[in-house]
Image (cartoon, rainbow, N blue to C red; front, side, top):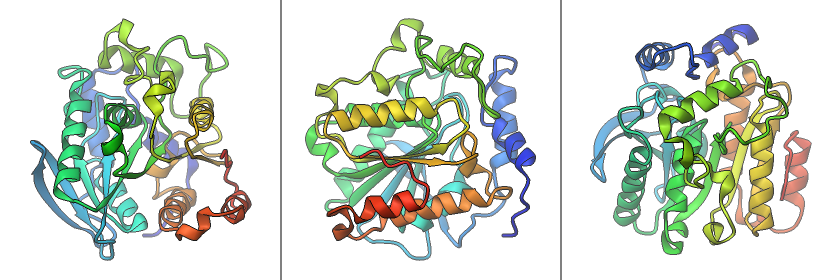
Length: 318
Protein backbone atom coordinates (compact mmCIF):
# COMPACT_ATOMS: atom_id res chain seq x y z
CA UNK A 1 0.00 0.00 0.00
CA UNK A 2 1.30 3.43 -0.93
CA UNK A 3 1.49 5.74 2.08
CA UNK A 4 0.69 9.42 1.60
CA UNK A 5 2.26 11.18 4.56
CA UNK A 6 -0.40 13.59 5.79
CA UNK A 7 -0.65 14.38 9.50
CA UNK A 8 -3.72 16.57 9.12
CA UNK A 9 -5.61 13.81 7.29
CA UNK A 10 -4.51 11.31 9.95
CA UNK A 11 -5.88 13.48 12.76
CA UNK A 12 -9.15 14.02 10.89
CA UNK A 13 -9.60 10.28 10.47
CA UNK A 14 -8.70 9.47 14.08
CA UNK A 15 -11.20 11.99 15.43
CA UNK A 16 -14.00 9.82 14.06
CA UNK A 17 -13.01 7.24 16.71
CA UNK A 18 -14.01 9.66 19.46
CA UNK A 19 -17.57 10.29 20.61
CA UNK A 20 -17.89 13.94 21.61
CA UNK A 21 -20.74 15.50 23.63
CA UNK A 22 -21.87 17.21 20.42
CA UNK A 23 -22.69 13.98 18.58
CA UNK A 24 -25.52 11.51 18.89
CA UNK A 25 -24.42 7.88 19.28
CA UNK A 26 -26.07 6.78 16.05
CA UNK A 27 -24.37 9.53 14.05
CA UNK A 28 -21.04 8.73 15.68
CA UNK A 29 -21.30 5.03 14.88
CA UNK A 30 -22.24 5.70 11.28
CA UNK A 31 -19.25 7.99 10.69
CA UNK A 32 -16.84 5.59 12.40
CA UNK A 33 -18.01 2.63 10.33
CA UNK A 34 -17.87 4.61 7.08
CA UNK A 35 -14.33 5.82 7.76
CA UNK A 36 -12.79 2.56 9.00
CA UNK A 37 -14.64 -0.29 7.30
CA UNK A 38 -12.61 -1.71 4.39
CA UNK A 39 -13.87 -3.38 1.23
CA UNK A 40 -11.30 -6.16 1.44
CA UNK A 41 -9.13 -7.75 4.12
CA UNK A 42 -5.48 -6.70 3.73
CA UNK A 43 -2.26 -8.66 4.25
CA UNK A 44 -3.68 -11.72 2.53
CA UNK A 45 -5.60 -12.72 5.67
CA UNK A 46 -8.48 -15.18 5.38
CA UNK A 47 -11.74 -14.05 6.98
CA UNK A 48 -14.47 -16.20 8.47
CA UNK A 49 -17.14 -15.85 11.15
CA UNK A 50 -17.84 -18.10 14.10
CA UNK A 51 -19.88 -18.17 17.29
CA UNK A 52 -17.46 -18.45 20.20
CA UNK A 53 -18.82 -18.53 23.72
CA UNK A 54 -22.19 -17.47 22.30
CA UNK A 55 -20.69 -14.33 20.74
CA UNK A 56 -20.32 -13.72 17.00
CA UNK A 57 -16.65 -13.27 16.12
CA UNK A 58 -14.42 -12.54 13.15
CA UNK A 59 -11.63 -15.05 12.63
CA UNK A 60 -8.69 -13.55 10.75
CA UNK A 61 -5.98 -15.99 9.68
CA UNK A 62 -2.75 -14.49 8.28
CA UNK A 63 -0.69 -16.23 5.61
CA UNK A 64 1.87 -17.37 8.20
CA UNK A 65 0.99 -17.96 11.83
CA UNK A 66 1.93 -19.95 14.90
CA UNK A 67 -0.38 -22.93 15.36
CA UNK A 68 -0.24 -22.58 19.14
CA UNK A 69 -1.03 -18.86 19.40
CA UNK A 70 -4.29 -16.92 19.16
CA UNK A 71 -4.92 -13.18 19.46
CA UNK A 72 -8.13 -11.96 21.12
CA UNK A 73 -8.75 -8.37 20.03
CA UNK A 74 -11.11 -5.97 21.83
CA UNK A 75 -11.94 -2.90 19.75
CA UNK A 76 -12.31 0.61 21.06
CA UNK A 77 -14.66 3.38 19.93
CA UNK A 78 -15.46 5.46 23.01
CA UNK A 79 -17.29 2.42 24.45
CA UNK A 80 -20.39 3.13 22.33
CA UNK A 81 -18.96 2.56 18.84
CA UNK A 82 -16.74 0.31 16.77
CA UNK A 83 -17.29 -3.19 15.43
CA UNK A 84 -15.64 -6.24 13.91
CA UNK A 85 -15.96 -4.62 10.49
CA UNK A 86 -14.43 -1.28 11.40
CA UNK A 87 -11.32 -2.80 13.03
CA UNK A 88 -10.92 -5.62 10.50
CA UNK A 89 -8.15 -3.95 8.50
CA UNK A 90 -6.07 -3.07 11.55
CA UNK A 91 -6.55 -6.50 13.13
CA UNK A 92 -5.48 -8.27 9.93
CA UNK A 93 -2.23 -6.32 9.97
CA UNK A 94 -1.67 -6.93 13.67
CA UNK A 95 -2.39 -10.66 13.31
CA UNK A 96 0.19 -10.84 10.52
CA UNK A 97 2.76 -9.00 12.65
CA UNK A 98 2.35 -11.18 15.75
CA UNK A 99 2.00 -14.41 13.71
CA UNK A 100 -1.33 -15.39 15.22
CA UNK A 101 -4.92 -16.08 14.28
CA UNK A 102 -7.04 -13.15 15.45
CA UNK A 103 -10.45 -13.48 17.09
CA UNK A 104 -12.49 -10.25 17.16
CA UNK A 105 -15.77 -10.45 19.09
CA UNK A 106 -18.86 -8.35 18.34
CA UNK A 107 -19.54 -7.52 21.98
CA UNK A 108 -22.53 -5.53 23.19
CA UNK A 109 -22.22 -1.75 23.40
CA UNK A 110 -23.76 1.02 25.49
CA UNK A 111 -25.96 2.90 25.91
CA UNK A 112 -28.35 0.02 25.12
CA UNK A 113 -26.02 -2.44 26.83
CA UNK A 114 -23.96 -0.63 29.48
CA UNK A 115 -21.28 -2.14 31.70
CA UNK A 116 -20.81 -5.04 32.34
CA UNK A 117 -22.43 -6.40 29.15
CA UNK A 118 -19.39 -5.97 26.88
CA UNK A 119 -17.05 -7.34 29.52
CA UNK A 120 -19.25 -10.41 29.94
CA UNK A 121 -19.13 -11.05 26.20
CA UNK A 122 -15.36 -10.75 26.01
CA UNK A 123 -14.96 -13.01 29.04
CA UNK A 124 -17.21 -15.61 27.42
CA UNK A 125 -15.07 -15.59 24.28
CA UNK A 126 -11.86 -15.86 26.28
CA UNK A 127 -13.16 -18.78 28.34
CA UNK A 128 -14.30 -20.62 25.20
CA UNK A 129 -10.92 -20.07 23.54
CA UNK A 130 -9.13 -21.31 26.65
CA UNK A 131 -11.33 -24.41 26.86
CA UNK A 132 -11.15 -25.29 23.17
CA UNK A 133 -7.46 -24.57 22.62
CA UNK A 134 -5.62 -26.46 25.33
CA UNK A 135 -1.92 -25.64 25.24
CA UNK A 136 -2.41 -22.61 22.98
CA UNK A 137 -1.05 -19.31 24.25
CA UNK A 138 -3.53 -16.45 24.19
CA UNK A 139 -2.60 -12.85 23.50
CA UNK A 140 -5.08 -10.12 24.38
CA UNK A 141 -4.94 -6.78 22.56
CA UNK A 142 -7.16 -3.71 22.73
CA UNK A 143 -7.28 -0.06 21.74
CA UNK A 144 -8.67 3.02 23.45
CA UNK A 145 -11.81 2.30 25.47
CA UNK A 146 -11.48 -1.37 24.50
CA UNK A 147 -8.58 -1.53 26.95
CA UNK A 148 -10.97 -0.92 29.84
CA UNK A 149 -13.24 -3.72 28.59
CA UNK A 150 -10.33 -6.13 28.03
CA UNK A 151 -8.68 -5.43 31.38
CA UNK A 152 -12.00 -5.77 33.18
CA UNK A 153 -12.26 -9.27 31.72
CA UNK A 154 -8.75 -10.18 32.85
CA UNK A 155 -9.35 -8.77 36.33
CA UNK A 156 -12.37 -11.09 36.57
CA UNK A 157 -10.32 -14.23 35.84
CA UNK A 158 -8.84 -16.54 38.44
CA UNK A 159 -5.10 -17.24 38.56
CA UNK A 160 -5.37 -20.44 36.51
CA UNK A 161 -7.14 -18.63 33.68
CA UNK A 162 -4.71 -15.71 33.81
CA UNK A 163 -1.81 -18.12 33.40
CA UNK A 164 -3.12 -18.92 29.89
CA UNK A 165 -2.47 -15.34 28.77
CA UNK A 166 0.93 -14.84 27.15
CA UNK A 167 0.63 -11.07 27.34
CA UNK A 168 -1.59 -8.02 26.95
CA UNK A 169 -1.02 -5.37 24.27
CA UNK A 170 -2.72 -2.00 24.67
CA UNK A 171 -2.88 0.86 22.17
CA UNK A 172 -3.55 4.30 23.70
CA UNK A 173 -5.56 2.72 26.53
CA UNK A 174 -8.31 4.32 28.59
CA UNK A 175 -7.34 3.34 32.12
CA UNK A 176 -9.19 5.79 34.36
CA UNK A 177 -12.46 7.31 33.16
CA UNK A 178 -13.35 9.00 36.46
CA UNK A 179 -13.60 12.77 36.68
CA UNK A 180 -11.13 12.64 39.58
CA UNK A 181 -8.18 11.80 37.32
CA UNK A 182 -5.83 14.75 36.92
CA UNK A 183 -4.91 15.19 33.25
CA UNK A 184 -2.76 18.17 34.20
CA UNK A 185 -5.41 20.75 33.37
CA UNK A 186 -9.19 20.89 33.06
CA UNK A 187 -8.57 22.15 29.52
CA UNK A 188 -5.92 19.55 28.68
CA UNK A 189 -6.38 18.49 25.07
CA UNK A 190 -4.52 16.72 22.32
CA UNK A 191 -5.19 16.72 18.57
CA UNK A 192 -7.67 13.84 18.72
CA UNK A 193 -9.35 13.51 22.11
CA UNK A 194 -10.32 15.78 25.00
CA UNK A 195 -11.04 15.18 28.67
CA UNK A 196 -14.73 15.99 28.21
CA UNK A 197 -14.97 13.34 25.47
CA UNK A 198 -13.75 10.66 27.87
CA UNK A 199 -16.14 11.75 30.61
CA UNK A 200 -19.06 11.83 28.17
CA UNK A 201 -18.29 8.30 27.00
CA UNK A 202 -18.06 7.21 30.64
CA UNK A 203 -21.55 8.58 31.34
CA UNK A 204 -22.98 6.30 28.65
CA UNK A 205 -20.90 3.31 29.69
CA UNK A 206 -21.81 3.12 33.37
CA UNK A 207 -23.46 4.99 36.25
CA UNK A 208 -21.55 7.78 37.98
CA UNK A 209 -20.65 5.99 41.20
CA UNK A 210 -19.23 3.01 39.30
CA UNK A 211 -16.41 4.82 37.49
CA UNK A 212 -14.12 4.15 40.48
CA UNK A 213 -14.63 0.41 40.04
CA UNK A 214 -11.28 -1.17 38.95
CA UNK A 215 -13.17 -3.15 36.30
CA UNK A 216 -14.20 0.18 34.78
CA UNK A 217 -11.07 2.20 35.60
CA UNK A 218 -8.26 -0.41 35.82
CA UNK A 219 -5.87 2.17 37.24
CA UNK A 220 -7.84 1.77 40.51
CA UNK A 221 -6.85 -1.93 40.86
CA UNK A 222 -5.15 -2.95 44.09
CA UNK A 223 -2.43 -5.49 44.83
CA UNK A 224 -4.82 -8.39 45.46
CA UNK A 225 -6.57 -7.86 42.12
CA UNK A 226 -3.25 -7.83 40.26
CA UNK A 227 -1.88 -11.09 41.63
CA UNK A 228 -0.73 -13.27 38.74
CA UNK A 229 -1.49 -10.54 36.20
CA UNK A 230 0.08 -11.09 32.75
CA UNK A 231 2.86 -8.98 31.27
CA UNK A 232 1.61 -5.79 29.62
CA UNK A 233 2.92 -3.83 26.61
CA UNK A 234 1.48 -0.34 26.14
CA UNK A 235 2.01 1.67 22.97
CA UNK A 236 0.92 5.28 22.73
CA UNK A 237 1.81 8.69 21.34
CA UNK A 238 3.88 11.33 23.05
CA UNK A 239 1.27 14.02 22.42
CA UNK A 240 -1.84 12.39 23.88
CA UNK A 241 -3.42 13.41 27.16
CA UNK A 242 -3.76 9.75 28.15
CA UNK A 243 0.01 9.22 28.26
CA UNK A 244 0.09 10.00 31.99
CA UNK A 245 -2.43 7.21 32.63
CA UNK A 246 -0.23 4.73 30.78
CA UNK A 247 2.79 5.77 32.84
CA UNK A 248 0.79 5.49 36.06
CA UNK A 249 -0.50 2.04 35.08
CA UNK A 250 2.98 0.80 34.24
CA UNK A 251 4.18 2.03 37.63
CA UNK A 252 1.25 0.29 39.33
CA UNK A 253 2.07 -3.00 37.63
CA UNK A 254 5.79 -2.80 38.33
CA UNK A 255 5.17 -1.93 41.98
CA UNK A 256 3.28 -5.23 42.15
CA UNK A 257 5.99 -7.26 40.43
CA UNK A 258 4.39 -7.36 36.96
CA UNK A 259 6.43 -6.69 33.82
CA UNK A 260 5.30 -3.69 31.80
CA UNK A 261 6.81 -2.04 28.73
CA UNK A 262 5.73 1.47 27.80
CA UNK A 263 6.36 2.30 24.14
CA UNK A 264 6.00 6.06 23.59
CA UNK A 265 6.25 7.35 20.01
CA UNK A 266 7.66 10.90 19.70
CA UNK A 267 5.32 13.41 18.12
CA UNK A 268 2.45 10.93 17.72
CA UNK A 269 -1.18 11.38 18.66
CA UNK A 270 -3.91 9.21 20.22
CA UNK A 271 -4.35 5.90 18.33
CA UNK A 272 -1.91 6.91 15.60
CA UNK A 273 -1.61 3.22 14.65
CA UNK A 274 -5.08 3.40 13.09
CA UNK A 275 -4.06 5.91 10.41
CA UNK A 276 -1.69 3.70 8.48
CA UNK A 277 -2.49 5.21 5.07
CA UNK A 278 -1.20 8.59 6.29
CA UNK A 279 1.57 7.82 8.81
CA UNK A 280 4.65 5.68 8.30
CA UNK A 281 4.89 5.42 12.10
CA UNK A 282 1.64 3.43 12.13
CA UNK A 283 3.29 0.59 10.21
CA UNK A 284 6.54 0.76 12.16
CA UNK A 285 4.66 0.64 15.46
CA UNK A 286 2.77 -2.53 14.53
CA UNK A 287 5.98 -4.11 13.25
CA UNK A 288 7.61 -3.35 16.60
CA UNK A 289 4.79 -5.12 18.40
CA UNK A 290 5.47 -8.15 16.23
CA UNK A 291 9.17 -8.18 17.09
CA UNK A 292 8.29 -7.95 20.75
CA UNK A 293 5.79 -10.81 20.67
CA UNK A 294 8.03 -13.02 18.55
CA UNK A 295 11.19 -12.38 20.56
CA UNK A 296 13.20 -15.41 21.64
CA UNK A 297 12.92 -16.56 25.29
CA UNK A 298 16.62 -15.86 25.82
CA UNK A 299 15.99 -12.19 25.02
CA UNK A 300 14.23 -11.87 28.36
CA UNK A 301 17.38 -12.82 30.23
CA UNK A 302 19.72 -10.02 31.14
CA UNK A 303 19.73 -6.47 29.86
CA UNK A 304 20.06 -6.89 26.09
CA UNK A 305 16.34 -6.53 25.40
CA UNK A 306 16.03 -3.27 27.34
CA UNK A 307 19.05 -1.78 25.55
CA UNK A 308 17.63 -2.67 22.14
CA UNK A 309 14.24 -1.19 23.00
CA UNK A 310 15.76 2.05 24.26
CA UNK A 311 17.74 2.41 21.05
CA UNK A 312 14.40 2.28 19.21
CA UNK A 313 13.00 5.22 21.22
CA UNK A 314 10.94 3.04 23.52
CA UNK A 315 10.36 4.33 27.02
CA UNK A 316 11.04 1.10 28.94
CA UNK A 317 9.70 0.97 32.47
CA UNK A 318 10.66 -2.44 33.78
